[in-house]
Image 1 (cartoon, rainbow, N blue to C red):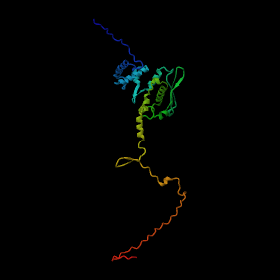
Image 2 (cartoon, one colour):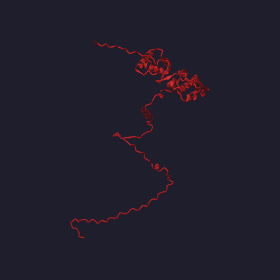
Image 3 (cartoon, one colour):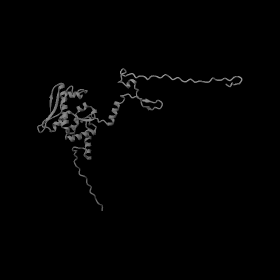
Image 4 (cartoon, rainbow, N blue to C red):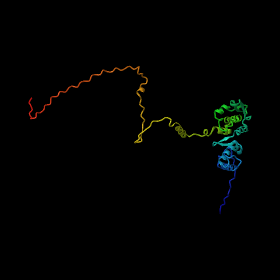
Length: 283
């Protein structure tokens, strides 16, 4: 008798991305399908068209902010390889969060290069929460005014408000903007401020910077090619005792020279010549 087995199919469940699309394999698959559909659209910005990876990141940030993915894509730009919020969206996030009792406001004083501004809001307990003060002198010192195409020269009142809002958000609402800079800040700061320098690369830069600053006298043997230690510079007699003055020094008396000794004269006996006949006298 053949035993029959009942084929059961697993009951499907609703998959919700929640606040983390990387929490499970099925959640990530759903996010990929969503990202593929968004990347094929021509309405999304160019940074997300035909780029599934960027769309997945936009979905992740939208889930964390509890907002629409389209809203994130329209206001999250890729500048110098880094994501950056538009300044208008930072203001919109702060006002829409209902974290504060009032909307974000600005205290703008002065004119021209004496202009200063800071953003503030009133919390639920009636306390005034202020952001850092932004001045035109700060903008000049940081180089914001000297950038090519900078709006600080044509519309300083608008730019100083935007910068005050982004500083307020980074100081008082870092969880809301996720520590991401505004697009204006990313453009003005430049890519080098965000790149982590490897210690080995830092050492190589320092070597190139400090190399060939002091000439080194290296002597090489032409025959063997061996590097010889440079000989120390010879010190002149004047440099040996630079503090001594020739006028102040007393003359050293010379010892009397002894007369040369005469060599004793050697007396030699007269050489006796031998007579031709061979006879030698006996005296």
